[in-house]
Amino acid sequence: MSTVTKSFRFRVYEADASTVAWTETVNLAGVGEVGGQRVSPLSGHTSARPWTVEIVDVNEVITARLADADGRAQLLHRLADLSVSTDGGSTWTVKATGRIARVQMSGVVAFLFEMQDERLIERATTIFEGSNTTRILPRGLNSAWVDYQAPRTRGFQVTAVDAGNNTSTYVIGPEDGQEWAPAPIDQALIELLESDVVDAPDDNQANFTYLRANINGTDRQVIGFGSSFARDPLGGIRSRTTLNGFSVAGYQDTVGFTRQVYLHMQGKDPSPDLPLHIGGQAGVDPFTLVKAIYDG
Image 1: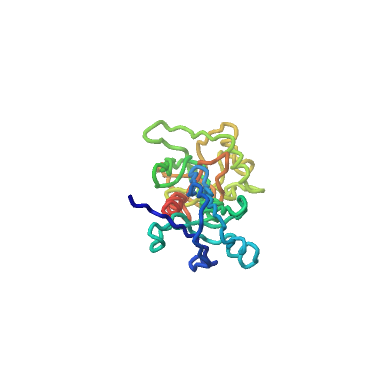
Image 2 (image 1 turned 90 degrees about the vertical axis):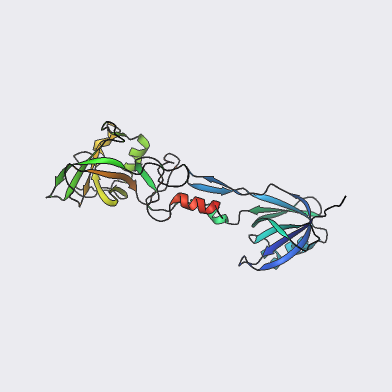
């Protein structure tokens, strides 16, 4: 019966991540579960699972590098890969690649290398573009990837136009053939809208900083909900906690027509209270980005 002898190789790259800085054929004490990534689409974040390589420093090569300033610079945060050979080193197969996040002694003559995902910065940050990220109505994700497609618009009927003030008013319409009914608005959304009201709102003017109504594909500036916009742009939803209609400034529509509308806040990231209000109409679609991360 023939035996197969495995050889292991650990390579550390230069700062350009393409040129090998140094190579060592290593004596492994163990390799932890190779990392990969966790993707949390509903919260809009990804995170890396670190993995470890424990190397027995038989010839004290690692010890010498850690004792030298230039050697240490070739370790921390550099790209490295772990390869295996079963033919005495003639051919090598890369088994794992990552960034060296930490090096510590493990026992008397061994060192433990903690490896992070190569795309470390992306894994530690929000993956969504900053524009048009917070969906108000309809709720849900705005993506065409996998099972996370959400309704993108809702029907609103044009009920009034004020040509003198260049405004249009919309009332919520039927959804999938159902009755015309207001949309529920919870307290967290009301607080979010309140935080967006401008300091000195004016009648028939845009009274929100980031809130927009996308009507048939075009963003319009929202005046408010209800009738007394100058005094309280949220008066139409604060007491009832439902959204029945809204008005926009700078646009004269056609009374009686039904428009497809969604309400969103430009430049607002999702929060723990509002994890589902994620869109991607501007910039990179969030789930296109997640898919790209999965695909490497």
